[in-house]
Length: 267
Image 1 (tube, one colour):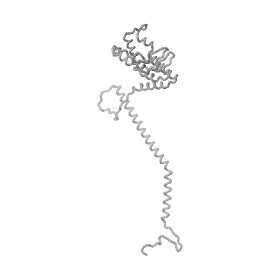
Image 2 (cartoon, rainbow, N blue to C red):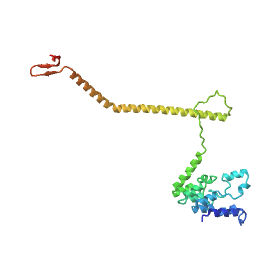
Image 3 (cartoon, one colour):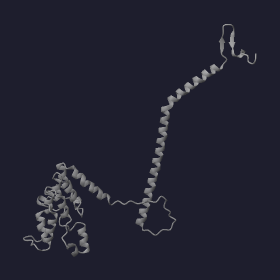
Image 4 (cartoon, one colour):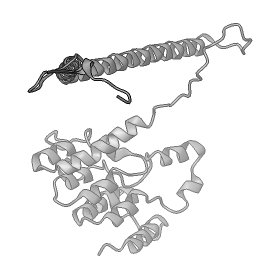
């Protein structure tokens, strides 16, 4: 019925010693034989899957030492794991990868406290040697593959460290604290990489300048015919002006008329 609180309470009763394990040597083996996590995946109940993946019996963490607590935090001692083998060698990941509409359950299985599900996605194999990733490929559930691959990429990229390299060059004459050879090699390699980056940036700026000059020349070549037309029109205008500036000759009926023969004054 997907009653998470009831299941958690019943698990607490089992580990308190109230119920006998019967023919099984331990309560853990009895629960593994029941396959609670497999059943929750088949019912497509994400809340139940999350409860089982994070379940630790009450009082167990108080009785463990520091090393054992660390193993619990890393997912080694969790009772219900995404890579637990069931009938036919199938893990809960195999079951989720072979069913339609199980994105939410698969997201919960690959988000367990110990991140075991991400490793088991391509590592856990059934009796035929197929992984959950193979099941998703055969069924055509490429959204499942994309979901898990995104988490794998995020996990692999979480180990990168971003360093803030100062803009001023390293000064060897400044007194510094003694460093061992390994740290000195790291500083030298970082300085070398920074110089290479500066050279690449300068080269890119030079390329941008050349590209800008090339664009300017191209624009001049485009406007050159228009400029030639304007020059030709200006030359024609100058020639016409020179012709009109010369002394014009106007032929009249009685006698030739010239501008130079015009008189001025009171007469």
